[in-house]
Amino acid sequence: MNWQDIVLYIAINAIPLVFAITLHEAAHGYVAKLFGDRTAWMLGRVTANPVKHIDPVGTVIVPLVMLVLSSGGFMFGWAKPVPVNFENLRRPKQDMLWVAAAGPGANILMLVIWLVLAKALLAAGGSGMAWEFWIRVADAGIIWNISLAILNLFPLLPLDGGRILASLLPNRLAYSYSRLEPYGMFILLFLVATPILGWILGPIMASARHAAYSLLRF
Figure (cartoon, rainbow, N blue to C red):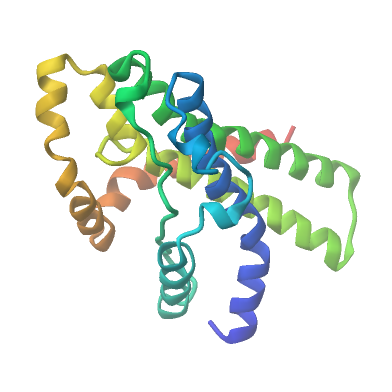
């Protein structure tokens, strides 16, 4: 991938990706506040301002390096996690499920918005660079939000899916499972660096994308 392709890729993906990451994290803090924990609210993290959520290394440097080295292939990165003190929640174990689900839920909502925008653009018809650009931006929004929702629902702590699973497990199993959290990121990095994660999530993401694009044909 040459530098012109990289600039175009960034221009198309920047808007949907920033929204996907920012509103995902803000949703965690907002729902935590609803259930009794104001930590993220007091730290100014319940906001659509991307500066509050972007991690310079995980959100900018690592994805750009991977973009250049992988010739536009797989990308991986992260945002600053929203701080949640689960002990402040009114029912910590039960409410943890809703706080964790809020992030992927925000991505699903944004997926619907990008689908509506793409449908409207296709229905209106059009041509030219501006029309094609926004079609590609909407397409990127669909892909990013599907990918982030499914990845974050993977049942591995500290991902949202891991917290949802811990909330649903009986207390003894939940406690044993939660003790794996310090190793969760190392496990995730191993899965990302090998084909294993692709084998597990690839078919799910492909099915979700097929279902989403089928809506654009009606």
